[in-house]
Image 1 (spheres, rainbow, N blue to C red):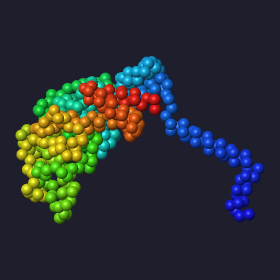
Image 2 (cartoon, one colour):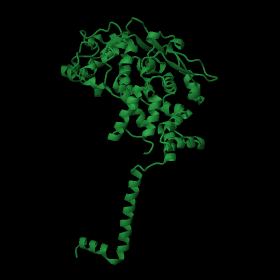
Image 3 (tube, rainbow, N blue to C red):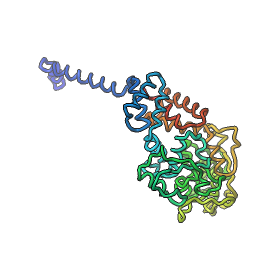
Image 4 (cartoon, rainbow, N blue to C red):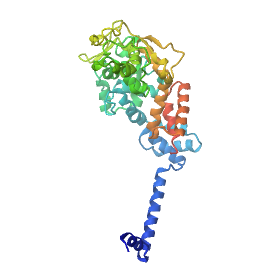
Length: 403
């Protein structure tokens, strides 16, 4: 008998039958266990309440809070249960803080210090300030707690010490304005763009294109590669962009144009801003273009020379019209404030916020048909309900409470 036949014979021989059946039963049990782990089981009211709280607040609920939430979930009011969870201090000091912090720095790390950018977004969520003003409002949140240095346009000590002291953000954040605290002209105060945190990260050196690019990433969920459009006019591309990089004009026409033809006309809105590294503060020069907009003019002397802070959205036509621009707005204007209104009125802005929140509280991207339908419904509520981001957290957590 050959070796293979011997193996088959040995496996079927009576002394090995018990071992064979035990092995088969073990495989069956393992498969059943795997199915149990990977298939969402129905969660009862108490389990749903606990899951909602932990996903929003980041910690287990107290027995009293769990009882309150379970009563809501038992009645089918999952959003009401989630509203109890968003009242937790840790929702603001942990979940929201970690949610926002990566937006505030080029490394997109959650380990950056608390600053006025993060604090302002957290405060806006707490107070149900319409989130579509995050790129345009003259708004700032400071912290009312003992022993803190005064907020300053020249340093981050106020926020860093508050974080070091473990200050409760929910209880201590106070709404004010950048014009009042930092002395920025009202017309120049443009939401998180002009906070010290936002300006030190994205207006520092360079050409101010970073502010536009990271806004696209953080607030419209698109990096420049995904919005490349080589069909737009090139007349507003600045002089610093070479038209024949490496001696090959095809690189410019097939690659550079795709980003710069849309970005440069909009980033012109930031022409009066710069972050001063020596004074460690934002500079705003009304009616005076910052020198950074005119650098490297020898790269292409016939390129666009920035005269002011006027901007135009060339993406309202062409493939990027799918970003969903608001036809009630003109699509052009002067300065960062009006550009912020343009970007935040887009459907892509609302889609981005809802998708990020869903992913945060549901621990998955909304890739399934059911999840995409859920996100679409929450987005519609977000836009119709005055852009309340706290409500998006509540509705997202309710939507995946049973999973």
